[in-house]
Length: 183
Image 1 (cartoon, helix red, strand yellow):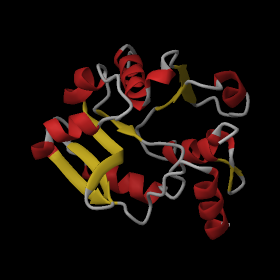
Image 2 (cartoon, one colour):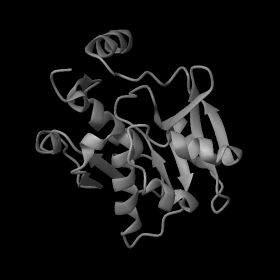
Image 3 (spheres, helix red, strand yellow):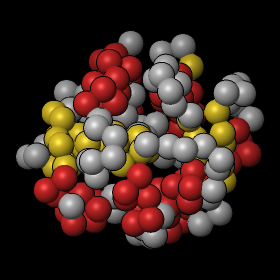
Image 4 (cartoon, rainbow, N blue to C red):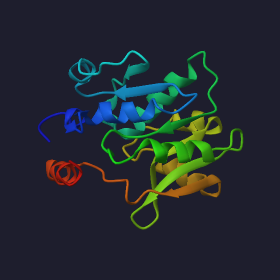
């Protein structure tokens, strides 16, 4: 894209900050931001002290590597978490109401996975995983994110329709189209 997509303008801020501002609204949560490429440039733009920013030096290995790094970081904290909600900065239509719906549907200690569904029932993020999956998530290392965990534990997945909210930004054209239709 020629520049870090996390820093592309969105509403009155930029994509990553928009995602952070949405995530921190959830009650009883702690927000971790996993960054890799362009770490210094991106962190210099984030103006929040109520989040934890962590650097994944192995970011080139893909999304699975970033998930694993983030979950391992969470596992080493002193906090006792019930689960982990994963979201991406390139899905700016995901709003607080959707995240709150996922969170309020989560049943602690039941090995539940809540996943967003879109385009022909494909499972993806935002997704909420019970702590039961932390070890498995911490071992991911490919660019397929948590898809492997979804498929191995499909009987524990609660799907939530997100087709109208999920518009991944993978190209500058994607961004320009989404931006113009939402500003």
